[in-house]
Amino acid sequence: MKALYSISATAKGGREGHVKSDNSIIDLDVRHPRALGGANDDYANPEMLFAAGYAACFDSALNRVIKLSKIQAGETKVTARIGIGQIEGGGFGLEAELHANIPGVSIVEAQQLVQKAHQVCPYSNATRGNIEVKLSVSND
Image (cartoon, rainbow, N blue to C red; front, side, top):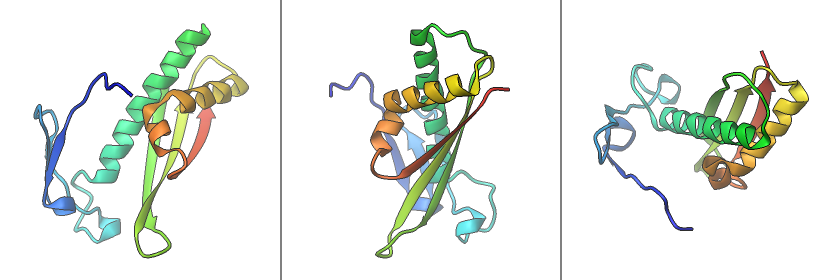
């Protein structure tokens, strides 16, 4: 693969620290969420950042697929839910759920578009075979 774009971010202090992108657009504290022993849910965490990136990337892939398919659809919206949990052997793993809302198309068309987007999206390609990704659609 020839990279078309790259960016870096640096973390200090892990899940109880700070992350900053090299262009300073992301510059924030991260903390454990309450569900993982944190004091509250008032800070960003790695799963939140991953969910935001996956949702934005998948929505972009979905819109590309819609455009290339020459289908008329309303404004799409993708919600990504990322879960973290303990896996066999004592480590931790992730799971993902993507819900795409595609107004103006049938549910069958929406499912087909989402499947195509799942083949195009870089996040989907990076996670394929590594974590479970559940896909769902709506058209309202």
